[in-house]
Length: 250
Image (cartoon, rainbow, N blue to C red; front, top):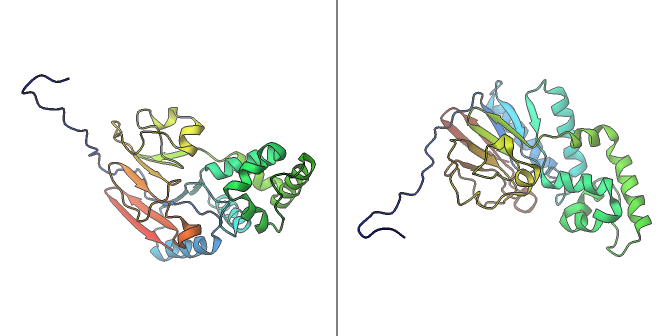
């Protein structure tokens, strides 16, 4: 309730300048689209921005047809990058790891969310939802052998966020009312209510994936990156520099 004649409080406005300490490329959800990823990396090379780091927001697997190839490419590139590349954890990496840890308990959920395509990329068949625990366990063991422990260990160690200056990168946005570093996995890889409605008051921009947008456009401190590559054939990234943001796609 407000007093007669008083003015409503002005809506908060996000007006912090874009101020990363270092320029970087942020890559949206890849979802098994290795061909598009290769084309996007070719664009980065042609862009000739040698000081820019490379940050991937997660969801490398499922739904697209080339998850095995994507994991192999990203793992090799990050290993050889000398710290210039960071791959974050997405909710689909978490579901894959959950399946490997508990095939019988997590298999149905993972299959319903694109796991069938990941299995196919390793030339493994799916399983019916009514399959016995033994069938699921066997499938999990075969997938573990196909991926290899080196890549599985790498996946388990993927960080949940990365930040330079006042620009943070997460998979699924973040709670706008908490510092990024104080947030747990659930908010950072599955999303948090209020992210699209509330304005951050700490001046931190958030680049994120997870939620498909038809046309990526920065707004109110939010930098969307997921353009649904597996469905649209469009993989999007952004070059983020002090005072400047440039979208590009393959």
